Amino acid sequence: MLVLLMQHGACLSKEIHPDQPLSPVGQGQVERAARAMRLLGLRPGAMAASTKTRARQTAEIVAKAVGFNPSRIACDEALKPSAPAETSLHFLHAFDKAEVLFVAGHLPNLNLLASRLMSPFPEPLNLGLENGGLLCLETTHLAAQNASLLWLLQAKHLQLLAGS
Image (cartoon, rainbow, N blue to C red):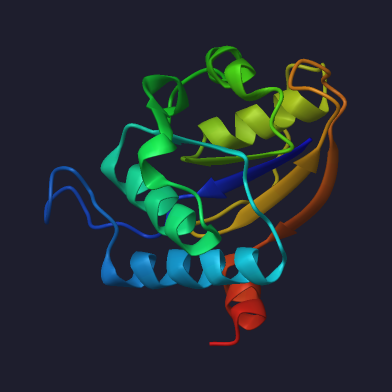
């Protein structure tokens, strides 16, 4: 199974909007990332997102670009920024049969989740995921703790792939 982890695009500050939706820059980041995903042939069989507006918007943009019904995106507090990796994994186990699972979320949760998928050790790995970036892991199942890091593409790399 492939696990695709994307940090939401750049968002507005709390001072501008308390829900912190994607900014115009963040919308562009995610649209280009989604276009690159489509060009790479990445078609999620399941999608999940944090309940935060910016993560839900990120997942919806990706879903539309790759032909996934946005109403099927599973949103849960288990993917919020401060959620422990174990909580996130417990929620994501429902999607263990998907060939490709896409998760839109936040730091530090995504970094902790990726670390937990790749290693049984408690110390998190510093993977360098940033706004609009996409991380791809391969694993036999979500509880294996031996996932392989296939690649990490920052927003600028995805923009180059998308051709704009």
